Image (cartoon, rainbow, N blue to C red):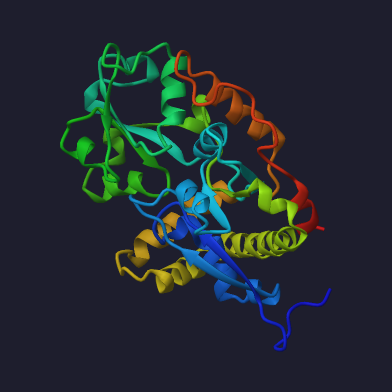
Length: 314
């Protein structure tokens, strides 16, 4: 297959991340640093996210060709009319969990009643609300009080909440780094509780997939990105250093990124990039079982495709 030579301009691709530059997105930075995108004739621009950046809004406004987003957020946007399609799923497992102080008396989810629980919003609340519904707990303050959590763990450290939302690869370690012993904590992984939904998939606008040139670009992008992910999994410390080189803010530290990459590698393990339909079905079922307030009200049609990964993984 002939790729772009010097005489041919590389195809531009803009990727919008779900959050700031960190090892959560190492595969893309590794693919860029190691020339995997270049070898596919692509010139990839990676846009960091942040608290004020919603990937769905960025792609809706034409600011990106492809975005990293969590499936609950993407499917909710699709039902509202933004025709997003999952073209690849580098993350096989969910890193989301509730981290609770043992001193709050919580030993199992049955003890959540009467407690204040910290939850992220902006699309990240959907798995939590579904979980509470499964437990038969109202989130209006009757059974549990939901504290709208910032992107930190202060409510737990200041004991304003019995539990806060954490990711296995990030905020959990912020609690530990603040001086709390793991022995003083109890964690509940969404994966273990049967309420996990898919995170960090790659999404594009449905109408763009009808364009063979765009589809071809995405095939090459996914192939190079998955090479980057497998490289990051195999060499986590080197991947963390590449991430640090791309952190324009200087906010990340080597120790934190290396630890994060070690945890991220557990979540991407077992994925070749192709979405597992069983994982998708489980996510949809979770999002539709939100009681009186489901995330989505009907089974999505055409919300994912193997069309890109089938060609990328040949």
